Each structure stands twice: as structure tokens, then as C-alpha cells.
Image (cartoon, rainbow over all chains, first blue to last red; front, side):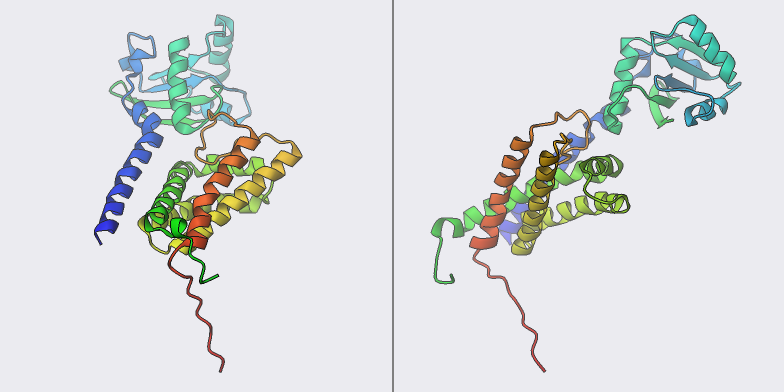
Length: 143
Length: 156
């Protein structure tokens, strides 16, 4: 009986260690301060942040999802740094986006990398909707 | 065979170490798959061995089998049955990796993690590692003190 108790104790401590090891990227994400990654002074104004690093087209799912956000002003859109102002204007006009759109940088990429690490997604080229609460990530959806 | 005693492998300490080692390997391997069944199903799909209808079921059931029998083995419950099931799983994994090696497909093993960041190790390494994992299972199966009880049905 004593030996079995030792085994149960060992098992429980091992399980806790394994869980911590595997859930570390997601636990780490919970404590991320968005303002450290998104270089915007007025970050408090926005409730949602959209990272548009993936494919966006009119008729595909991502486009349909974006159309639903038209006229929402408490939204911040972050696009890859390669995108020029003319592309940003096109994006705004096509999807009737009212929120602020700006180019991301290496820090924003780091934030996306943290999310994809938790979600086990291989590629950084994804579209993400992040729901923000007190500078922390409350929830996120890939679209 | 009954009369043969394998002193070292029969030893209680060796058996306990084998049980804990194999059990912990499978518990460790199962946790990430339980949390990420969709990613695991994609890995199984890449193996191109199962029909699509079975992939999701396989991705959900296998990690739980690994975890439950890993825990049983670690705690010393049904050691032979658990060792048999886990060794069978290892054998299936070796066969799956071998088939893909013959096909020339370099797949993400998905053995311990569903993370795409995992480096794809070479197939020879995977097979040797899995063969090493098979050793404790075989030690428990064939050299354990506790005999397998086969209850024969009485003929009426």
C-alpha cells in the first residue's frame, strides 16, 4: 500500500509537470501585455484588434468575416509591414472599414507567434480577431 | 517455460522501473494530443494510412487509451494488459513510420507533441527510439512474476 501511495504521489507530480510544460505557451499568452507589442498610444480605445496577416478576399470566409465588422470604430486593424498606404486604402474601401489600420512590425509578429504557438498553428500568415480586456488578451478567433 | 527464472528481469525493482518508465512515456505523449485533437488528426491524416472517416475517431480515442493505460501501468494496475496494449501501440507506430519511410514521405511524427515547431527527426531515429520504448513493455509482458490468468469457459 505504501509503495502504491508513493507511485500515486509521483504520478500526480509528474502530471502537473507535464501539464505545465505543455500549457506554458497558453499560460504565457494570458499574461501578455498587448501594449508592449502593439505600438499604439491609444490602445485603450480599441476593444478588438484584427491581425490581417493571412489571405483576405471578397468572397472567401475571411472577407465575409471582415464585412461583418464594417462601421465598427472600436476596432484596430494591423496589417503586415510590407503593405503600402495604397493597399491599406483599398482594404478600407473594399470592406468599408471604419477602424484604424496600421502596419505592424517585428513586435506584432512576436505577439502573433505567441498565439500560434499556443494554438499549434504552423504559419504566421493567418487572420486573427483578438478581443482585448485591460491590455490583456481575453479571447481570440482565427478567421 | 514456467521453470525458467530470469533473475534480473524478474526482479521487482526492474519491473517497477519498466512500468513507471513506459507509463510515464505514454502519459507524457498523450497530454498534448488530448488538448489538441484537431492538430493530431491532421498529423494522422499526413500519414495517409487511415480512411478520413476514422481519422477524427482515432485522434480522439488513441490519446485517451495512451493516458489511461499509461496511468494503469505507472500505478501497477493490470501491468500485463497495459504493457500489451501499449506495446501493441508502439508496434503500430513503428509499422506506420516504416510504411511512410518506404513511400519516401517525411512526416511529422506526432509522437509526443502536435506542435508544428517540432523538428522532423529522421525516420531511422524514430524507429530506433520506438524500438527502445518497446523494451520495457516486453520485459513486463514476458518476465513479470504475475502470470496472465486465462479463464477457460467450462464446457457444458
